[in-house]
Length: 304
Image (cartoon, rainbow, N blue to C red; front, top):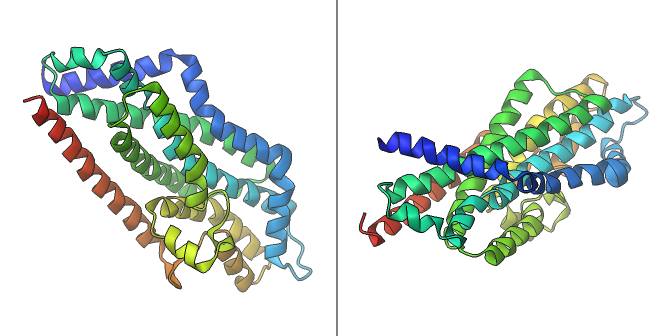
């Protein structure tokens, strides 16, 4: 069997093992769905009021569906950008389980190269995380369609692209960190730490505009911040355009983009959308190089 066939077989095996346990799949979904539920039941009016205050409509009548939809879209950009990373850490359980149950030792004495094995774990994690994110996206978009859908076909396509970029970043980061994890307790600790902290340090749960300038500049050095930024742009573009057509002045619309992180600034300079992609994908390239070094060193250690 060629290495390519071995690779595909391992990816299929890892993915099947993950989805065979329905509880594990449910647990991957539960965090983003809880965030969506909390928004709908408790935080919806808070977000809507925040957008109304930021608008400063000056007696211009605005369709309530635009405001409600924009609040929901802002939340969806937060959920997808954060969960693309946090779910990647949780869904990498097959690699850890193989270590715990010593299945990894069977692979090490088989004709499968360590590089092929490591790449199969990564590819499976990417595929699993992508499926989970698409399920979350579908549920969130059903809600947006109910309250106010102003997302264009072009932005919808770019949202999927943004999600793939964030998943690429999340799975690479998870692959590097969890390559050093070999117990269920350590996996739980790492997953809990990432889930509780990541959303805050990348500005997903609270806009960076609410932080002090020094803290904003520090957090602006983190690539995850730009994953949130690109998602914000494509989720909010249609709603901003609808508000513009409703007669909201351009300065108020730009204020909304500034206040809710569609516009990002670093040391007083606005970061263009293209630069956000460049920073995020450049970080992915660095993480890929680090992951490759780890895989190669492990292969050399085994003398293969």
